[in-house]
Length: 355
Image (cartoon, rainbow, N blue to C red; front, side):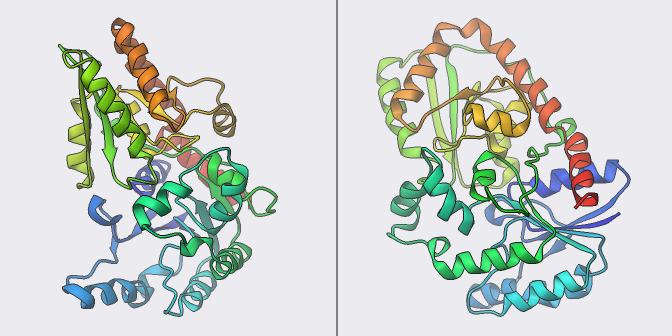
């Protein structure tokens, strides 16, 4: 099949493309490389123009690239609001895209209007309030408006279905007939070097800085302040980020433990990369999330959104330092078994063909 993967979040589509290619399909990724992460793409929506001209250029690039975006068996959009600009007629663009390709699917990935309307109500905890307070510095988000929900719903109705990548987005589309089965996030573990997780003089714990509020970084900061004072000779605690993906992964390689997102019920791509490297990972591992992925257990250490949860789990690891090597190996095996890019790509192919 000929497949267009439209948009990128943290190399999700890049990894899926590589899995599809190994299965013999012709797959390309179109997008802007997910901003500062600079993930490589095949059809580039970036603009070389400076300032406001570059911003306008990026918005027009998909339309100007339309000849490269038609004639596919499958088009998959990373998020309903990817390429959506309120004051540009993007609805017409999506109508054109759907008409000029065979099948159109979307991912439930990243926040969208369904996640904000339904996920916020159903999930026992989430990133919503901290995202508004710390990231947007506002009491309102456009995803939480009626017009955004209407747009999201209209695109859903035009699609062949929406595929959640984790439990949180599955919940957001609960009750929708076009919600398809959740498919795990893919990762090409062959390109991620596994190293035995050896602890030196200090246990190195790392939390990636990206969206401060959305990831619940304030809880990690509070925990690290406490732990640094209590265990100055036993712990090295690092919060850093907002850098290209290759540099970020290099930073992560020297750590023993990676803390993913505090408000997540599931593990994001950052955490899955860490697992593939052989790190001990803390983050979302709620039982319903595991059920959504079709697994019964995981080496991921589940965290609740509080500094106390981080403190307790890191202190537990300090007491079992000798087990960290084995935990790291379990992480790698889980990444290969559940998130391996070829295995996951086949699940996408089956889903596309059957819907």
